[in-house]
Length: 125
Image 1 (tube, one colour):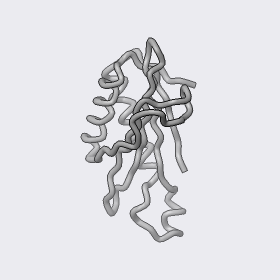
Image 2 (cartoon, rainbow, N blue to C red):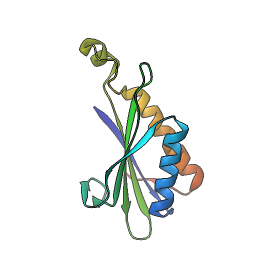
Image 3 (cartoon, rainbow, N blue to C red):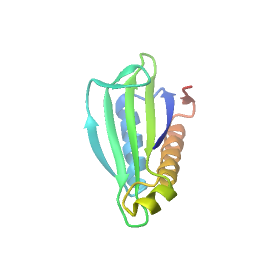
Image 4 (cartoon, rainbow, N blue to C red):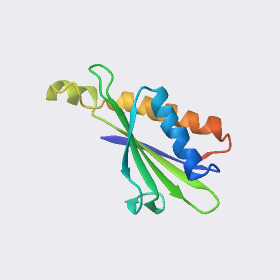
């Protein structure tokens, strides 16, 4: 399961990636590169960079993907919270699956960090 949100920002791709990576670090997550070029995704077809922020802990497992796009005058950042609902985690008996609600809270924290850095960042419908 997943939930996503996308923003348009005036930050450069490097600045946006730094903000997202910094937010993941503040959330005690680690960052892993998914791809650097040519990744097909939703906003504008091809992402320039994609990373995964995640934390694996017994009671605090979450995962958020971040896709970065150059849209000309602005940059797009799509955040995707990954995880299973509590019921699926209980039925499946796997405690280390990412929890969707925790991932969504972390995704919201990353959105807040982007908006702190660029107050004019807008949600993309």
